[in-house]
Amino acid sequence: MSVPWGFGVDTWSIGILILELLEGRNLFYPIDEVRNQYVLPLALAQYIAVLGLPPLWMIQETTNPTIPTFFDSQWICEVPIPEFSLEEFVTAIPPGTEKDHFLSYMRRILVWDGAEASAPEAATEHPRDVKAAIGDDSHLDRIQLPQQRQPFCDAPVDSPASFCVE
Image (cartoon, rainbow, N blue to C red; front, side, top):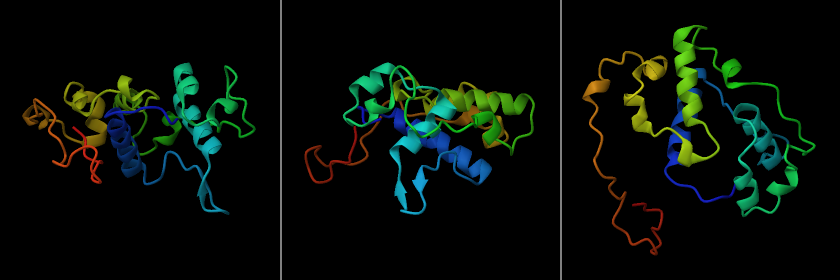
């Protein structure tokens, strides 16, 4: 959405990775295969199918001037919102309690606003919800989470290695 983001993006990526490993296919595929290029309206339509409409603040604060043209309190783009859901996408887990818990966890990870996403360490707080994704949860009580986030590298933020995050 071309808005500021933080570590919630990492949580989103973990969720997408879990789903793609579990299902062996992409949840989102916004690629025009004829031109072999990413298609923004197609991506947004696919996200809306799974997540619902984005928060109004994201549409208003985006730095991409094209994004607001797709909305007028609802999706008005000519690209249709596909008819699929996260529940339909997940087929590797049979219907039942485990799938319900797994989907509940995924819904806390896959959100528009990364600040509202459950942090990866929340998996240790909800072991039943992720059991379907990680198997036996008996080891979750041994996970040691760092008390303070360490930088990924020592390069100054304004250096060419500015990918380093504190």
